[in-house]
Image (cartoon, rainbow, N blue to C red):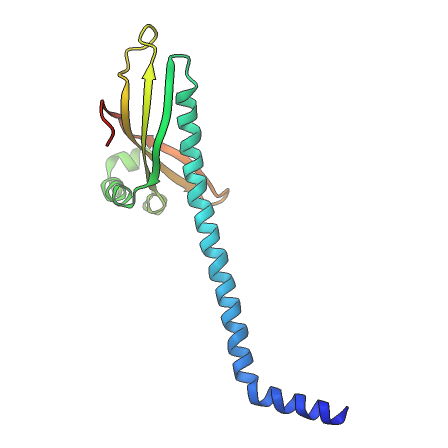
Amino acid sequence: MYKFICNLKKFFQTYFFIIIAVIIACVLLCTFGVYVFKNQMSNSNSISVVKSELNNIASKEYTLNFEIISIEIDPNESERIINTYKESELAKERRWSNELLDDLIAIKTIYYIEYDHSKTFIDDGYTEQYFYLIKDNSSETWEIIDISSPYISNTPK
């Protein structure tokens, strides 16, 4: 038994720093993995919010046919809108701080829609539309704060 304890002590003295480095690496990787997973969940939640809004459009009594073609976060449009709104009169009027705008994302949607023209005047077709969302950090929920005017065409993009 004494020999076993001496060998164990010698082992730990030899490999102490390697063991500590492995433990630190594991903790860092786990922390990074949780952060990445949380960020992915957060982005998927924002897309779920937009899908829910699109489902509301699809469920209108004057909608005959509705199909989502694509839905994705558009980083270029997000950056453009953030730069447009920062320090603007509109942002001040709506009480959007720069910190709030830093978390804004733009989600580009493309969908096909047909309407019952006896109930609405809206054109049918392939529609491209942006939804602008901000995240409430206290509740971790996304909120649509603005929607672009739809661009409608007869051919898919």
